[in-house]
Image (cartoon, rainbow, N blue to C red; front, side, top):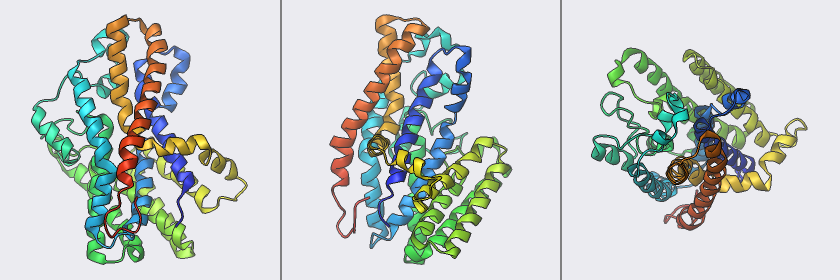
Length: 370
């Protein structure tokens, strides 16, 4: 399979969407802004699309490594260097204090208080250990409350991603050739999703898991795996398999009674169609947007952009509030452009000097880097 450039553009646009969604709750918008606020309030749906994209990429990548250990090594090289640097910075920024007491216009604003912690979590050692090992998505809610978002909010999805990598590696280790067993991997993920639904219904609140637990997101990964088969085989069996997985994922989403869980599988199918049939007249404008230089550049820095936007936004708010003590209007005028510029600058530096350097180093025996 050739590189899916349109989906690189999707990755970049999703990262920008998440960045805007993380920032706009901290601005006192006028009443006419409410429709725009609603549009940017579906950050979790955007992450669901990231999971589908990851399922496709990993399904494509597994067969390129002769041993699953090399695959996991490559994924660690892909995730950890940028993640550990950003997490260290996020912890230091939390230690500087919370900007929320300087922003009275946010009093009682639930989304703002959920995005920015007011203090260090306790016990800090356990939260740090969970984040450093990317196991914070495996901890029940009652055992360590809010562990999945305490130090670096966007990192909850990295724990889910790592669980998926390990699960996919185990399936391939048991079945053999990943290329021939993509349908089985997709079905394993669907079974995990069903088990997650049953567990949530049966378990007490103390033992329930957060959204970072793989079974709670496995359907979207399954959709990505089925997409990889569709793009490679392009036959009737692959199309039927994809449509069946899509139907099951939609049914799982409907079972949760959450409308924004139904949208990602449908939107993903539209984006996938732009790769599957790029010359279709109705899809050509979408392909042009996703292949544009801007979208491709955003796709290149999407991973550090996704991770770093929240701590940078918090730091800029703290600096502005302590130095200027602005009102809500002045804060918006100062903070929005400053935080956007700083986020893009830091993400670009991380991509060039950290992410890109590590991606260039191939594990011995790997066919390509990923």
